[in-house]
Length: 112
Length: 114
Image (cartoon, rainbow over all chains, first blue to last red; front, side, top):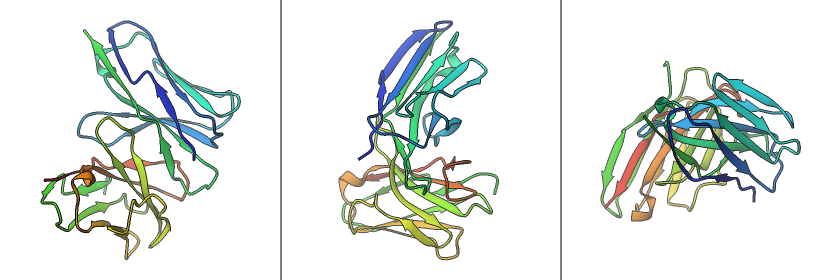
């Protein structure tokens, strides 16, 4: 069974601070996605990483896929209150059906 | 439509009752997925449709859960003899093809079984 462990599960920081969220597994994933979810809404896709070692940037967000494609990280620089939300990583396995395996999420609270 | 539409947004039902949850995917998306999200957890896969057929139903927890997509567009998730443990947010997603690119989620249906 493929599992994804996210850490930390909860993070409360001040505006302007930097943070990193980790997503780890003992299994290899063909690709990995990061989503952001706000209360009462569905997850919204931020990025998909496919190649081991790949780094993608989305404004102040930097995403990295591990060399072995078993782990990923999300780094936010100079967090803003608008970054508050639930961050989810999700991996696609080898079945190629598009089925995603989600981590349990990291709740980020950015205080003004 | 412009996005994935799920109805109702909230459903409260009594234990033992039957419920239907509807998902209207993005027009032209052939792949449709159902997930269930419990409080404080990530979404958990239930079932995947490619067109009209269920290509992977390995996530359905038991035979009380069933889903259909008769015309390859709208899908209905059906839960018989609901239990309090079925309370969760049920999310639907669609994508253009059967891989995980271009996933778009709906806002979900919050089901509460009392």
